[in-house]
Length: 302
Image (cartoon, rainbow, N blue to C red; front, side, top):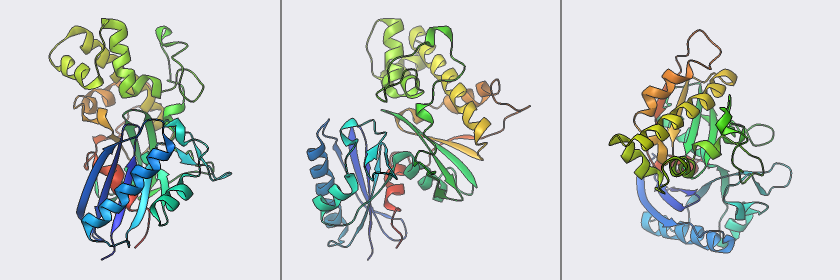
């Protein structure tokens, strides 16, 4: 049986899945990402590939696709634009092939996510879909007719590293981003950014999940933080609608589980979309945390 293995190499965790040719889940594993240690990341991914093959009974015959928080430069073949900065400038596909003993295909994690959702998820049937990752970082990917559109520079959909649009005075000049600029969308809409906003206003450090829980329990500081988050997300996604006008926008990542986003953000973005009305659906992903790894598994045709 031809087995597909997909790996989602995230900033805090590495998740892997083995799929049958029909897309049925055969095995799944998850481990923490070694922080800032490139050699340890290679070992962890290789060990996961071998373990998933064993679990799925593939016996060394599986294809391997890896979703990464960055992109492969078409010029150098090296990783660029990765928020896991230890990957930048590395020949990750070649190094993973050596570590695992088999060919490996790489793609941006947001592209893997949107391809998965376009195949049989929340964007199924859409001609043009935009997928958003709201997690440790913020990314975006575009699927055209179900296939990832990467662009001439392999940066199509990299919406998180545009400046936050229509900024309020207290948002300027913005906090520094790992990319070397200030005020990127990622610095306002990631999980750490949500936690930082709450800490600045409430004087207490909480992770993003606890902030959301407190907002749902009517904590005034947390409610205000979440309202600011929704308004910023609406501004940022309005630019996507203005430029791409997709058939659907699908949210992924840890913050995509905030249920109120799907009603509040489309209502708010009407103010900034350059149209008499914006009817673009904003949907939660269908496959949850598995969407990125499923998309990675489909990087190889069988």
